Length: 348
Image 1 (cartoon, rainbow, N blue to C red):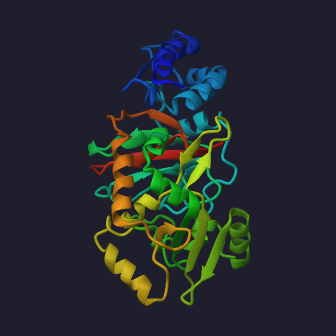
Image 2 (image 1 turned 90 degrees about the horizontal axis):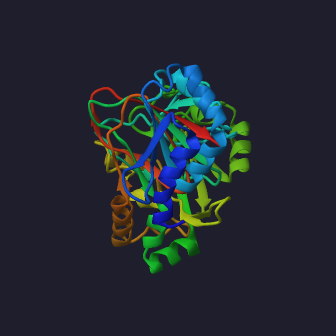
Image 3 (image 1 turned 90 degrees about the vertical axis):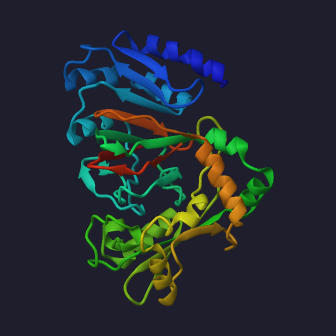
């Protein structure tokens, strides 16, 4: 679909969704599509949920066509409100089992967003891009925006994929990506880890302290478990660098190999952590080509720049909900100060 077509769809979207909302975009032809409630149109949560039910088919179509939508101005205040809304959409059945980020369940389908320190900028990525299986869609709820910064940023993976250097793209397509992730031994860390996923117990990651169950889950999801002498776990997984959209048939870059140089650099004691893993005979957390070779630093820098050039950010308001297509649109987070409470849900 062309940018002009998408721009024309803004007025068509408003018409399809009824008089209770108005639609707008930040940039012609680029996500997200803002769907803002008209004053007084949705006085209660119940009316909001009725409207979502009535317009589910249209909302699903808009998420697919626009890549991302933002619902704004609706009476959504608590995690329970957000859970009631995402309950109207199909869940991602596998959930966050095997997921790598530090986060905890809040209620129902609702999880914390990644709880890394506010000083850390979270680079653009597709949710669970380090795994073979991934949620088709993801929803964010800005319950409490940060005092400064902290925006959940997004980028069009269609734009990123189109701008990739042909030689680099060929290399990524040929070799794929090897991902290495490390997790601590059970009961050596709490369920909420604020600094680095390497400190997260593998029992928390998989929801069990049974090695046999972990090995079965790894088999189901295409990961290789390596049990270390200290009781910790190293996961090795191989993924394609590009994934084909199940509906549109388009091929999108879906990998976090571009974050490899950032795995430890963003942390104050990151290099110490990396050296400790090496001394213990473990593979450091990170991403290489499938043959084990790292991207050339210049290749990685070009890839980072292409992605960064596609990033879109805007001030979030309390109660904003964004639902995005996890292949078409990546997400990240700007550094922030003050308290910030953003919640997520994985959707089918």
